[in-house]
Amino acid sequence: MFGLGMPELLVILVVAVVVIGPKRLPDIARALGKGMREFRRATDDIKQSITLDHDDYNPTAALKKIHHPPETPAQNPAEPPVPSQSSPDDDGKTGI
Image (cartoon, rainbow, N blue to C red; front, side):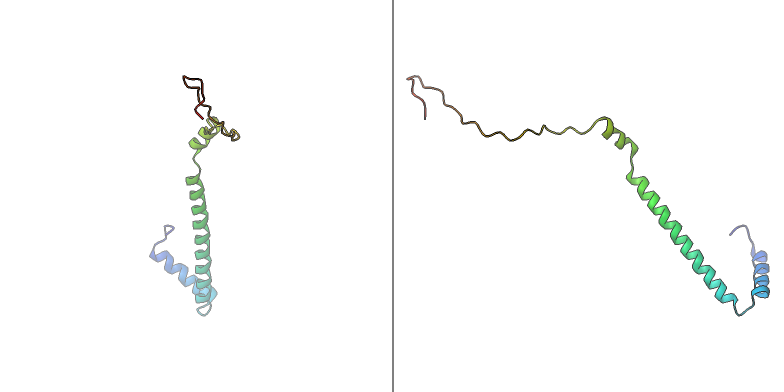
């Protein structure tokens, strides 16, 4: 933890008790812990949103869409069906 060993932590604790006092030390430590927890939560949320944005964005696929748009069938307006005409039989009559 930041390259601090046990002797350094004990010195910091003793100085904190002398400067702050034993009655207020738990309150200050609790507030410091809550602040660190909120900071960690905020940084984790930012990391997660960056990761999600990075996973959703694929530059290769985006470039392919720009250079080669997907082909769609031609959108012709619907034409009314043309009635089929029967061919005349050998005797010249229509088959209707």
